[in-house]
Image (cartoon, rainbow, N blue to C red):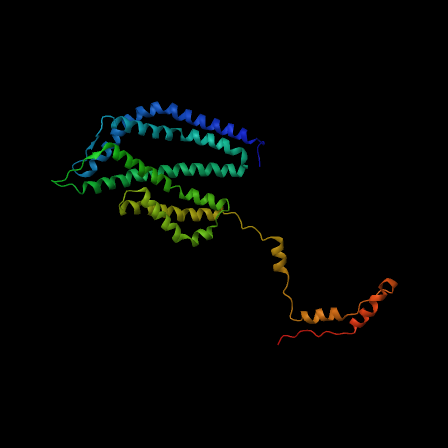
Length: 300
């Protein structure tokens, strides 16, 4: 493998430095992220509250709930903002153990994973959340008025955005499995029903308990899986050649039906017996055995 050899403790020390620098980057971005979250949350709620006809009102039910929600959102923003730097740190830790072609592939997969996560989160925010709000507003009546808690709504929105971002990573996982030779594309095609069932199960876990949101997560994920199969077929390494023993055994012709005749002929063929006195006691037995003939076994 390329790169200089290091001991296990040296690798641990380097990994410790990567973690500390990543945490420091998140901590530095936490303060501007808190200020940004204080202005971003009202804007997002304003964009969503008009989807329920007469408008949906968001409320909080504890004195510190708005502060905790803003703090949670600021932490997520800080993590998201520090993600490029953290990815660069992790890439610098892994790159010395990779070849140049593997480094290029790793960079492409990391960029694709980041873009797919953004696409999944944007899909959830622009389509799934408004759909859920319309669904919640459909139960409004003169006797039943919706009151949405701010903390509950942020938790639900965070679960949806995170769930869609994770599910949209399926093409990257498929390409990695196929490129490393752990799974063949032919095997994935044959296992398509199992993959579809797994996607439906994960969609049921990562979405609220309604069929519409589950299907809206499962259908794009399945389409991404089919697209990943097409891409992985181009990047799939060639099949390993069969071993030398298998090649020799497959190249050796089968034994003909006349093998008993050949064996019998070799057995009945006379062999010279040395005239040395040391072999004299065995000479008579060899001559008597030479006179016996065996008949080959014939298959009926």
